[in-house]
Amino acid sequence: MPLNTDIDRLALGEVSHAGRHYMFLFDVADERFVAAARYEVHPRYFECVNLVSDGYGPTMFMLLMQKARREGMLGVAPDLLYNSDEAKRMDARFYSDALPGVCYVANDDARHAEVYLNQIYFLNADVVAEVTARANADGYFGDLLRPGASPEELGALVERLEAYLFRSELPFK
Image 1 (cartoon, helix red, strand yellow):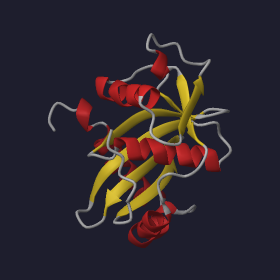
Image 2 (cartoon, rainbow, N blue to C red; image 1 turned 180 degrees about the horizontal axis):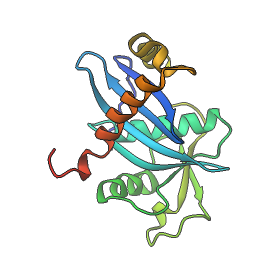
Image 3 (cartoon, rainbow, N blue to C red; image 1 turned 180 degrees about the vertical axis):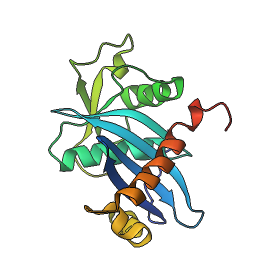
Image 4 (spheres, helix red, strand yellow; image 1 turned 90 degrees about the vertical axis):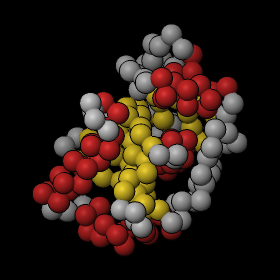
């Protein structure tokens, strides 16, 4: 399972809009998303409801785990209702062939047939350095990622994120 820990050339951003929460990696040079996740906030953990990437899936999942730890949450759980075959493969690898630093505990809220989908995954320490990628996002997106951003501009960014996240569900790619 490839884990790209060097994300210094990318921009790492987060945005919440209309009750939805997103984290994304953006290639500033190519002006395109290379990974994005939409997640729900539960009282004890984040639920990753959608994750799409172009080679940065495990990295994005690790970044969500780091965010959960920083915010005092237990960790990140796979979607409680639906998981694509690709998501199942990644979650199975996190469970059976865990990357260094990845731990998990049973998630009592999950009811999947696959045991690896019934876990909350977490880290005890950061694995992926984020400082430069976050600074890149600040430089590229500016005030758009800060509280008080223009609702229209924020909506346009979220629309682009949603298009990227749901491209696999569209009839034309």
